[in-house]
Length: 137
Image (cartoon, rainbow, N blue to C red):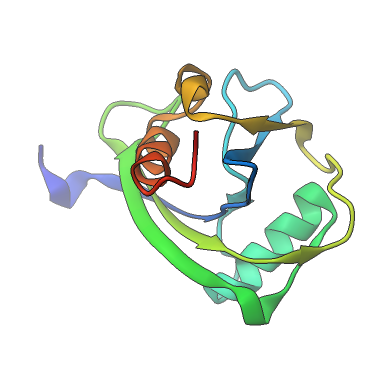
């Protein structure tokens, strides 16, 4: 693969685990669930972009002081041409408010490791990592 021609979609994700299940979302018109998050806008920091995206999509406020990096994962981008990769920089954080599907989000669901057939390639890497670290059943 010629990496100089490789297109990279740079995204951020919020990992919220409860009872060894992970918070996932499905957007209108999509066939897969995704870990919530999105792309930076206008030179935003990771913190600014992630807080904005989560507020827009799930109507909750991430507690900035609790943000902690989980890892960076890269895989083929779901629904894109071969060679278009997505890089997902993941964080955990506490939040305040009531989770609610907003904006383009159609559904919120708590997924387990056995739900890997319902998610994108990059999320499968994240599920593997969380499962290996005994955070996800």
